[in-house]
Image 1: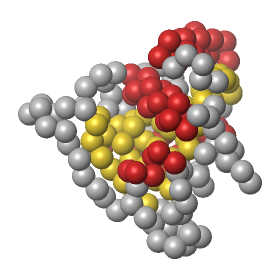
Image 2: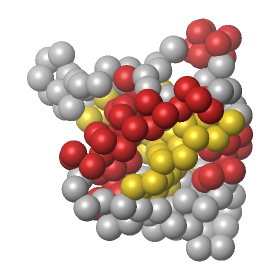
Image 3: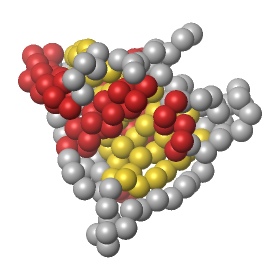
Length: 182
């Protein structure tokens, strides 16, 4: 199956806005489409969030092909289905930490366990300032511009996942944080 475009999950939170910006940047770099997905219990709630997301992308990336879709359901399963057809799926992370995350549920954590395609998790709950990214991929296949930030998972088809973590933006000391995890 050929994977196309970048898919990003949004919910209106600062973390999802940061993920939206990063997904739009990646779609522009790859000259591909951006699919904005909002998984929601009540479809009537989706309109303002999706309209705002589309307007933000169009203002920052004129000419980028953008689609917006509201789907009834829970975020992780909905995004996992959409990820099957995406070259890359991007989600934000509220940064609830090791205790609150599992207790309250983490969309990014559940999605990482459900998806079979490349997943970029953008960590950092503020719309501006330092943040980090984790790129998870099922094999060592080329991911285009994002591949500069990955760590090989082993032979293609091995089923291993590479996790590449790096910081973006200035830290409190003014330095740019960077690190790798596997």
